[in-house]
Image (cartoon, rainbow, N blue to C red):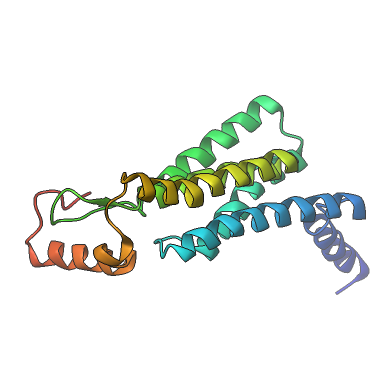
Length: 194
């Protein structure tokens, strides 16, 4: 190969791997992604502690993915109007992911996973917030999510609003398996597509 070919290859590689112009920009991107991961991880730990269907890794990936969906357009110089369309896409996509955590049990009218789906939704919003460089807003939102998930759960039990305990219902994973087994066996109650 001649020098022209090597120069073309070198230039192509430079263009492909030169999306970050300087060290300061790289630091900003890394800090925003790490903030999204850490805050989402805190929420994921709380969900993991409750043996929810979506735990630590899921929440961390949702936070990072949501941050990336706004970081890349910001890097590309997308206008604020176009960025709102990106955020709308993230919200729609997270709705599908959250729906996967919701399970209607075939026995009775129990619906499980709504809180986990809501926490995934909130985590995506926190990831977007961190990605847009609003770290304090993301931190405050994470605090409020933890307040809702942890402290309000205890208050619900004390006030008698939550009479069932996770031990009497079985773990979320076991409950999901039982409901799926019932659907496979044909003993479900007409809501098989839910």
